[in-house]
Length: 66
Image (cartoon, rainbow, N blue to C red; front, side):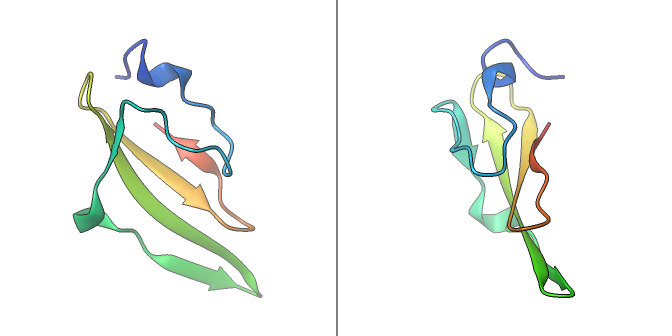
């Protein structure tokens, strides 16, 4: 469950993380490509509530996913 602080995170794939989000380098996601359309997964954790978020970038990325 997300908190009031991290729920303010914009969901777009080009949106930067909020200040409460901490990047988790050990859990770097996969780079996937299908017919030239790619996505890259990165994982973040909210410092306020501990909820983990996935950030997908690239042409097929879905943005921020709680």
